[in-house]
Amino acid sequence: MTNLPASKPRIGLLGTGPWAERTHAPALAAHPGVEFAGVWGRRPEAAAALAAAHGTTAYEDADALFAACDAVAFALPPDVQAPLAARAAAAGCHVLLDKPVATDAALARKTADEVTAAGVASVVFCTLRFAEPTARWIEEQTAAGGWFLGEAHWLGALFSPEADSPYAASPWRREKGGLWDVGPHVLSVYLPILGDVTSVTCAAGRADTRHLVLRHASGASSTMTLTLSAPPAASEAALSLYGERGRVTMPDWNGALGAFGHAVDALLESIRTGRPHPCDIRFGARLTEILAEAERQSEAAGRSEA
Image (cartoon, rainbow, N blue to C red; front, side, top):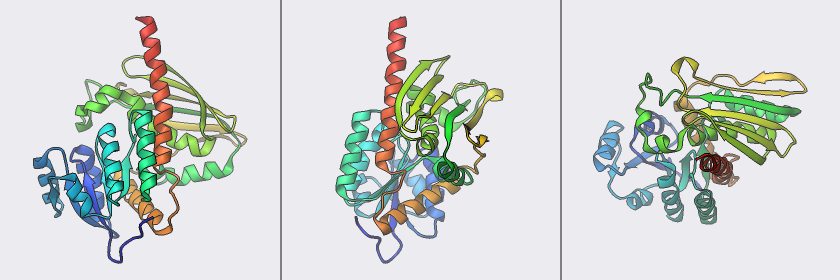
């Protein structure tokens, strides 16, 4: 694995949308341990504006950004992100990816294989694994063990007519819905605590609502209800575990900006030590495999009802 340079590592950003503008760029610009080395986007004018806002350089060519960086962060649609991550790794850049890594299981596995073969470090930004206090809570419940049931509701109102969010215009979120946007968050909590998923059953509800029942390697089971189309008054993000110590509920977290800074820290630590982070690209690919199976079941049920 490539070591850190003697000076601050140079990290570039790929992406110029609201997620990049509100989270990735300000977090990279404020991080004391890195140099925010540049921005690339599919819209050059947006890349120029975002770079100017943070005193860095806009690149019109992604490969030129890779050549100028030690690592790169991604704020792109998942199936745009995956092939670019493989190119970045081949150029020697460590990668900080967004979730999901991809929405196609074969593409996710291929990208994970290519990034791993390149010998670079990788981290997938699953917010709850890096935000406080959820990251600490996940570690505590993993160490405690003894869980037999998980229950999660992530009811987003992004697509509600009453909602007003810049993320509602995201084409991939419109196409893929809550299963792919918020499903990775719930799985990123369940898997370290309850173990890998050994079976999944998925049923469709209203609009993009999906109900999942999971079995885990530990013998525990869990449920997930996911949507981006809830009425604002009904929106919530809640996860509970039931076990030998009774019921525990995941705490609220303090937003994505600080969490992304912790994800940068995790990438730097993985580069320094050569140890893969638990939330690396292979973990991200596994999340895609589980969600792809849930999507397959949901689509098959829809065809049988037609």
